[in-house]
Each structure stands twice: as structure tokens, then as C-alpha cells.
Image 1 (cartoon, rainbow, N blue to C red):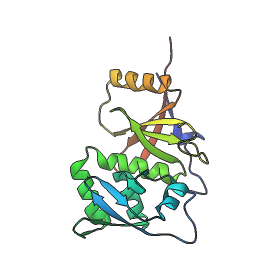
Image 2: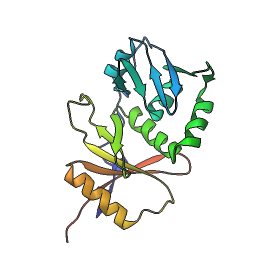
Image 3: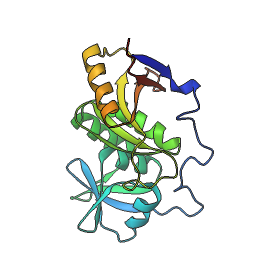
Length: 198
């Protein structure tokens, strides 16, 4: 197993244009919290999907995952209400998600950091691969993801058996595996893992 620190590498470096969606005119959307997802019923929500690839459409409703909703709320792109018209601020919504989703804060810090670097990031698959990350400038859904991310909190042990398992998943799907380690200060460090045959 070969592990390379990507923070010192050219890959996953910050972009000067952190995100395509940043523009002079910022559209603010209203979303309804239903369970752990946020529904946006505004027809204009297609712009949000097309410019930043947030959420997925179901019956003309844009449905945001918890990480997407919290980031858009933090960036003042989204107002969130529940079905009783209770308004959620960043703190209330983050506390709600942390209470209901294991390791939510670690995942959020990784998600936010990747988005701030200008990459498209989508949910992964299975228990081990939390995120798929697409290269800058590609169209999600039309292009394949380049990286698979596995976030962990600093000091949390990762068994070699589990590391071997996620390395095989990445290899079989022809993606680069990146371990994202979040330290106690909330800083994210990226390590690319490669299988080394002896």
C-alpha cells in the first residue's frame, strides 16, 4: 500500500474559480425539510442543479442531501423551513443532522472543502466509499468520477482489512482512492492510496 499526501501534490489543489456557481447575482431558494432531505419545489431550482450539480430531481422537485442543504444554507443560497414553517438557521440544521447522521460533521467538513476547491462531489456507494469526486469542468452524470473518498477523523483507527477492501473497490472501478483525514481543528488532509504488489 502506497500513501501519498495530496496536500503537497498538484491534485485536489484549490482553484482560483472556487465554484462555477459564484456570480454577481446570487439566487436564493426556499427549501422544505422532510426527514433528512430538503425539497425545493421552485422551477428555477434547475439552475442550481445545472450550475453546481446539487441534488437530484424527482417529479420536478429538487431533492438535496443533508450535506448539500447545509452548505447552501451556510453560503446563504438557501432558506430552510420544516413542514410547520419553522425556520432553520445554520446551527439548528447542523445540530439536527449531527444528531441523526453518524459522523456527519466529519463528512460535512470534507464535503465543504472539496466544493470550495471547485470540484463536483456526489454521494458515494456502499458503506466504505462516502463520496465520488469529479474533475473540474466535467458534467456529472455524463462523465465518470475521478476519485473515491473515504473520510476519517484523526485518531480513529482504520483496519488494514478495511483499507484493503476500499482499495480494491477503487481499483475495480478504475478510480483513485483518497483518504480524507479531518483533524481536531477541522483541517482536511488528503492521502491518495495505491495498491503496491510485492
